[in-house]
Length: 333
Ligand code: NAD
Ligand code: DAU
Image (cartoon, rainbow, N blue to C red; front, side):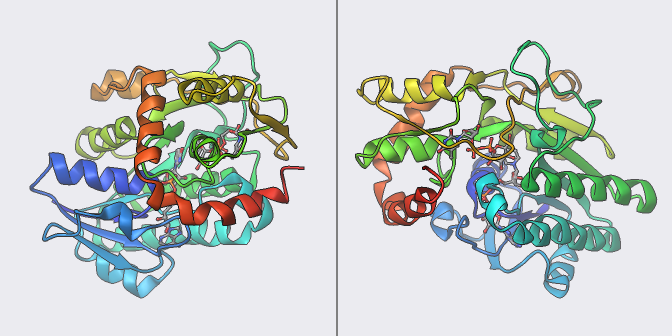
């Protein structure tokens, strides 16, 4: 199989490349990545060999996308601007990459009849109330994005649905909950707090800290995507989640405890505008139809491993820390 992976130098994309490289030696991988601030060639260390090549370029570049898609059997599309806080400051880049980029890829997938998998987010469904925790997003949930980022992801999902229906593009969509694990950019919640503690800063909790996210280890997300591209049904949407709902406060307290700090050694800071209260995924469809199940079922153990990874890879994040925190300083009043 010839696989084109967009955004393969970012957090989830690089973990997916690694997963495929290790588990499926018959697959040849081309990565298309612009190497924005979130993409890093180092994330692919040890992988850029005969079976994996990196093409540095933009998914909105029609001619480049046309060439690469003509050489592809299956495209897995991760590339996106992915951070909510950034979308609140400069939303236009999100429209360009997430909407126009997805459109550009779909047109090429249509031309060359390439199977296309669109990696999306649970945030397209908006927010759930904090209680009851048993209420979850399903594939019948209404699209109700509440942020500039989630609006662009919702738009991209709808483009995929339109291209399937009108042009018979052989596409699938997955909407996954919050990922954690190695190689996640330190602007994101869990790595930000781990690297805050490692660099002598205090973790920062937005608003009340009561907001809930449904966490999944990035390796389980990779395995779910592999199941979809090999066994999933064209035109279908699959929701991916590992039943790990935790408030942000619980996560920060667990990180502090695992890192030997007092559990109240954090600061409350200004809330994120439009901050969604809770996300939670009902993943029964992918479990039932594709036999997928998460293997990382010990969240606290997964956090401990993630802490170890950031401890052992200080040179991966240290030189970005000051700039990331300087950007946040304008927000954390
Ligand atoms: P990330 O920000 O870590 O990585 C994004 C990658 O895309 C980077 O390597 C970047 O260089 C590349 N990229 C961005 N714009 C590009 C463009 N115009 N052309 C080519 N490359 C471009 O993001 P992530 O957290 O790995 O998320 C990957 C995908 O998964 C996104 O589509 C995101 O919406 C989705 N998703 C993320 C999560 C999560 O918890 N992080 C959960 C569900 C879905
Ligand atoms: O749900 C899937 C989504 O998860 C993905 O689509 C996004 O790409 C990904 O970034 C993530 O979005 P969130 O906004 O949920 O993730 P983030 O890591 O930014 O924040 C997680 C929670 O932690 C959220 O409630 C905001 C809060 N937070 C975040 C930061 C950075 C804090 O309390 N303090 C912080 O410093």
